[in-house]
Amino acid sequence: TGAITFTPVADFNGTPAPISYQVADVGGLLSNTVSVSVTITPVNDAPIVDLNSVATAADTARDHATIFTEGDAPLPVAPAADVSDIGENDIASLKIAVAGILDGAFEVVAIGGTTFNPTLTSSAIITIGGTDFQVTYTAGSAGTGTFFIQQVGGGAIPHADLDALVQSVTY
Image (tube, rainbow, N blue to C red; front, side):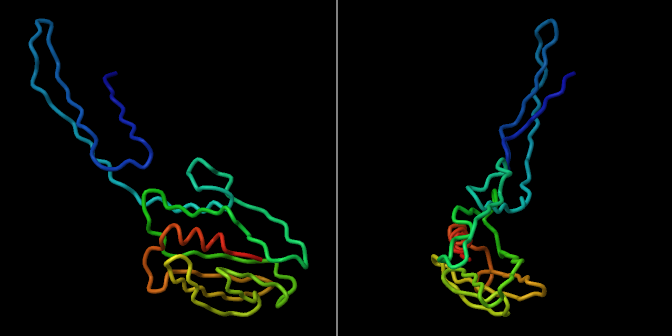
């Protein structure tokens, strides 16, 4: 068919080596050489949150379940969590939704060692690694609430500190 297919590796961007063409006739005379260059423009891939292992596009089992027994010490919710932004490092915020709050003030969620009562709206600055995080918790209705987390001053959150923050969440 004369078709040439170019398939770069996943998340490649830039300019690979050009593809050159030259033809010969039956007498062996060669044509001029022409080239095709391909420029691959990167796209902003969506970040991945994996609560049970290292986040990769191939790993699709990303949820995590744990069991808490009333009266026990707080336990990490997702101790092996990984947050990744393939090809970029520009995650700016994180949202954690909580639901099923049955015992109100007797339930405690901690992030980076700072405790939050899931029935009261509150905020705190938490330092993990070298990053100061602004954590704002908004209590909802019917036993729900939302944490909104971003770096103090805005900007991209360092990957290692974001992973450590997610791994630090206890219930």
